[in-house]
Length: 189
Image: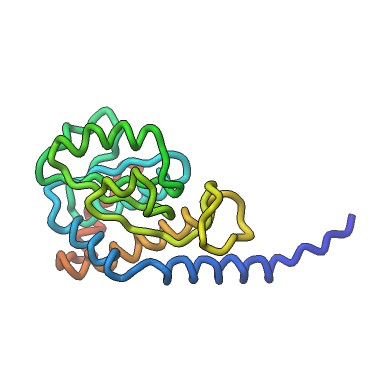
């Protein structure tokens, strides 16, 4: 069977999409993301599916920075409250579990930071800070260009790079040292 799949061209297109999406995030929103994290007493992250995986990798790096971070749903997650930051993600701007948890987080006095492609949706508008990622999600109707990748892959990949970019900024803001970050890396491997 002869297959003329152009791996190189598809890869180049993916990288171009990712670059366009990452560079499309507003600098002011990135500044707010880093500032909210830097001033939070504790950080709580919540997401589902592949977005959850991106948030888990972010939580890991926040821990390496020495910040107190919790993954919502883990049995060791404490109660959220005043001075805390809840970071959540829903590319589509609609997620029943995020909506339910928002009903707990907002009255607790914690701040809410919401990552989405649909910042005009009702749920993200309830957040204190919205970071809009201009990328295709599973929801139709976005004005953003379509991706060659399936479903929300572009949104999720952009999240991962955006989170790593934020870590670089937080290293500067917090004066973090590489050696201290490395010492916090798990030794239970």
